[in-house]
Image (cartoon, rainbow, N blue to C red):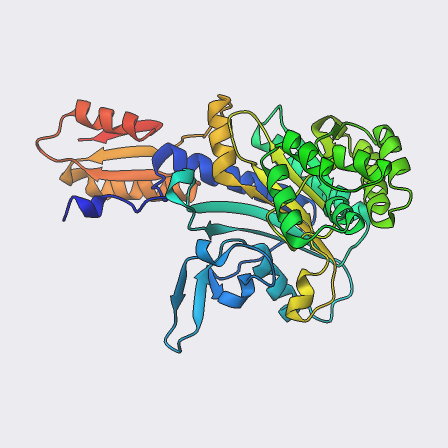
Length: 395
């Protein structure tokens, strides 16, 4: 039984020593990036009422939530996603605010994935939400901030894939698809099975323009000039046309930010989060099979909490980003300056005074009273194992 207590449950892990220091440093670096854009920190509870993440809001399926009860019998869940919590806070504390609200956060999320998926069930997310601004300028700011974060993390090569929720929804609406057909098509797109999409389209009675739009679901575009054909085909479908024009305008702004080389447009992009209403995006890099960042516009989410406010945001999955940095052998140096003082009993007062002086000057100092059976070599090896910069003996 004692040996069993040493292990963590499936889907979670311990992080310690150098890896933990790197994670904390990365989080602080990204948090400072968000603050430089004028975003204000906010913390929300690790658990919330079940309804905050319920099916109506459209986040995580109930079976994937960690659920438990409080003393009054209310159903609570560990948060699987932080955005709905931010939406609840915004409605509660900024209900009367009619100017844009910029919030940033960092915290752990919990999803009870199936064990065969091989994913962590607890992960750290860092993100930002821009509320009260419906403009394409807000879309561009958020995506530019994502690119800035990934660059500050040390990534040289990454890709931000951008789509629009209304392109897919407009297709479903114009084609008159039923819910079951929509789910089948959504699954095919999520699995990147575009041959399956083509076969599915052949079973539908569609005009030529609509067929062409369906066949664009697997296309990637690098610039707004490539949207011409899509706009022509969508001329009689206002919802689809509006989505394409929004992406086109967004591309122009991202060129001003100077990040167009990191951006591609994916018209068929869909998200598991049903609350997205406009721009949606995900970030990818080498060494990570999953997206390292996800985000989008959710203009109706806050209405569930009583505030009529448009919003857009994103979340960086810190654990995925760290793994990608490691696999790409991108190192960010940790400035180890810790001083270790090993002292004999007769030098105790001197050691403590010296440590206090060094700490007052901002240096980390570790004190160890020398044990008789330990040699200098033992303490030297200990210092090396713990990345201690300097070792002094007072013996």
